[in-house]
Length: 175
Image (tube, rainbow, N blue to C red; front, side, top):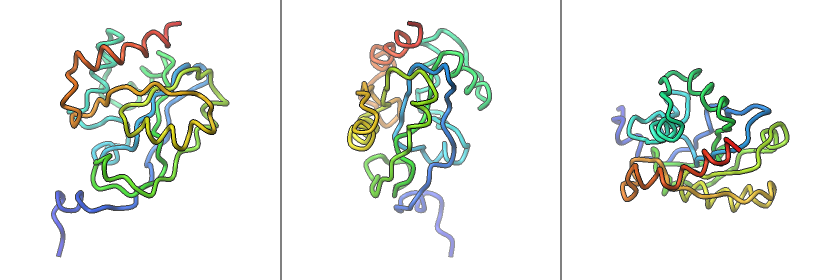
């Protein structure tokens, strides 16, 4: 008997990060999420859930429309010297719930940091920030600025609230 999709997403399951980072040698900042949502895992790219405010926020900060296709989104990030990845390589997770994450195996950030000009790390949300501090900071020695999560689950922070914090990335990419 098949479980319905909603029930399946409520069960904890071991997941591997399904796609690679976006970066190049000119990347100046690294934005790290925790782990891709169910929708992002299905679509094969970051922040694919339509209610996640990540892409709309970047459009607003850089005053530029970002097409919805993956190659255009990658090109936008690289144009603005932004590297994008997640802290977690493998974990157990229920659906898209950061609160359910356990058995974490962190990503290897060394290729990005050695092959680029990263001088600032930003974490998209508290979970990414906590996991970066635990697993990555001892290796990278680059402190991270933890920004409010762009997830719709972070309803306490309005779009304008997010922008007040996230504008810091603009300052780091134009300098």
